[in-house]
Length: 66
Image 1 (cartoon, rainbow, N blue to C red):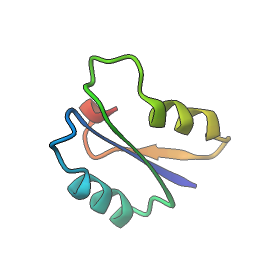
Image 2: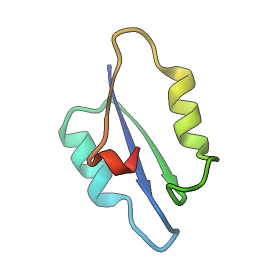
Image 3: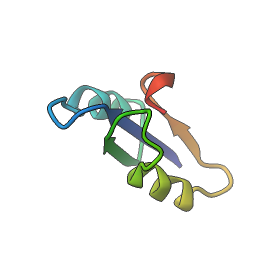
């Protein structure tokens, strides 16, 4: 399964362009956080990591989003 992860740094920013790109790349599941990359607490990233199984592929729009 292809799984997408999106992140923006502030609540003011939109996830739309990232989630659209991930869906276009074939992501069947999407996880998204609105939190600074410097923060260690990213609930959706943690949820995604807990749900990963052998054979899953994680995709992001840019490496710095992960």
